[in-house]
Length: 320
Image: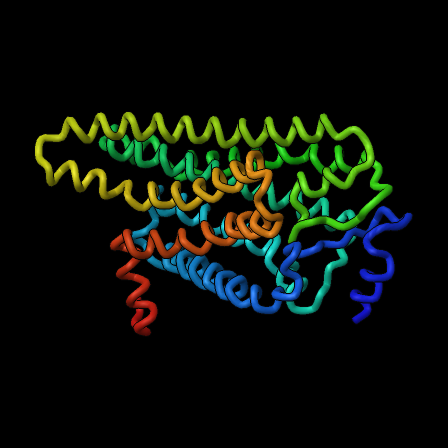
């Protein structure tokens, strides 16, 4: 293959800083074709699940409510997050297409991290939705109007873009005079920064601060929302009312676990797992990208009766 010849001939080094090579999964190159099977299966489930979710929410008038609007935002973000990386990853596994231009790499990195930040913001918005629904049910319709929901969506987008926009410009200023081989399946920020032959302290610190700022603040506000929700639920008279109120939060709590567990696991191993094999780091990083977008439609489809009923009707070929 032409890519193989260029890859082996240059060994990922040279004077052309505009071309980089994605290694895929280091140490498991011979198994790329087999690894592509679960990756492709998960990607197919992501596309099918999230498109189905969006179709059901759009076509069913009874789902035109704030909770489902936020769920639709989450489905869109999950789709975009997957589409940003998976086509290139599969092309590496199937066709050994490792080459990527530096500009394309920066664009992929920008969108990848931006959509990750938006995913966290939407989960925070969904926690706010549950807080208002349980703690201020009589004002729910007046607080979460369509206008407010649209503003929340735009704020999530603006926050992601403003925080991530400096990263590509910071990286463009760095010289890449040695290896052009990125030890990853996609252009992740730290994997690209490690290739620079200059002082990268500012880029490192900026990336860490943004990660802690986003994850820290969002998780704190989500936690505070659920503390207030739990207090409100415990004030309810009967056990049935308490269980019903908590039941409306079940899907969102599962989504939080699905999204943040791989993030925490990946970050912990990346920071402290010095003796963990590189391919384990990369597989976990890919799990973070694939698992939440695949599981979110399943979680909401199983635990939300309105969605479950409409999906069953859809696949039985009946009209809504």
